[in-house]
Amino acid sequence: MEEMLAYRMIAGQKPFEQLVSSIPQPGEGEALVKVAGCGVCHTDLSFWHYGVPTRKALPLVLGHEISGTVIKGPANLKGKSVIVPAVLPCGECELCRNGRSNICQKQKMPGNDFDGGFASHTVVPARFLTVIPDKALANHSLAELSVIADAISTPYQVIIKSELKPGDLAIVIGVGGIGIYAAQLAKILGGNVLAIDVSQQKLDQLSQIGVTAALNTSGLDIKEIKKQVKAKCQEIGASPYGWKIYEMSGTKAGQELAFALLGIASTMSVVGFTLDKLEVRLSNLMAFDAQLIGTWGCRPELYADVIDLVIGGRLKLKPFTQTMPLSQINDVFKQTLEHKLLKRTVLVPNL
Ligand SMILES: [Zn+2]
Ligand SMILES: [Zn+2]
Image (cartoon, rainbow, N blue to C red; front, side):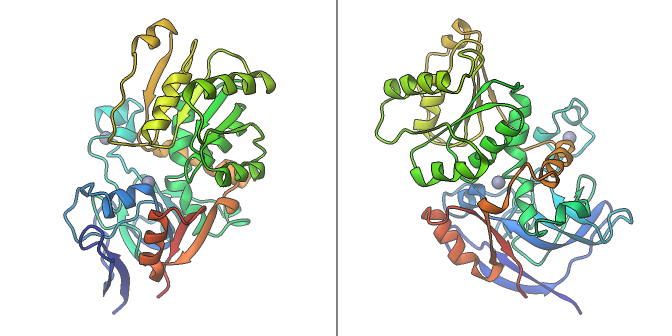
């Protein structure tokens, strides 16, 4: 009998437990995916370290940034390389029918609603799996492409939702694991990108994607940052109006700054998550005719666009991604928690 390997979360902050079991069979509408790679996301850390409860009770295999090969399931998917969207909607409800499937209330998330990708195999709903054309595998391994499932698709969804137009100043606050792709995508879609972070190491990565406008805000107060942002805006010839501000840091300081930068006809997008609360003057939205939007996940329909950007070589994944053996999961989680890994880590099953 064929066996599969998985690393299960048993309890918060405890080491993941290795489990060898028989390979599950997909049911109606499901697919069995042989995992090529699964990215480690901040959300996994929230479950494992910060006490955010998973929807399915523990023990649970985490991991929702999955790429792999369908080995059992619908005939049209068998043998295909796929991305498993991090948010799998029902496809039928009112939200799904109205183009809001990313927030479908019947959505299923691997590594949250059911056993996810830190395993050699996973059974997932088949309907919204995104097939990866062979061309996309010319310059990337299938494992590397797993980051499309969340780290890239989520910023893509928000940039589309914010209606970024060519020439708009796109301010990305926090250029870590997800923010670096927000900066990259905003640039590809014609934005005049200004990246903000408190880590010089992260800002230094921007040269690899051709983003030259950067601001290290470490030690600066909001007033000074606003002054410097205005100067940068002029320097790069961006419009002083209609700024698109993307809060990717998920910190109170980042959100305060993002709100403070909101000006005439601006849009602030909240992507990063924190439990902290802010005191702000919401009437600024009225005075500036500005908007404040949030985003969750990505509609599966948009994945093909993202894959096209990778195929064309415009969207670069390699410099910001590293693969590690799945057996090192405990080490990788610890190092990710301690911010020791600059690149997003994709765990690759090693049997
Ligand atoms: Zn995630
Ligand atoms: Zn739905």
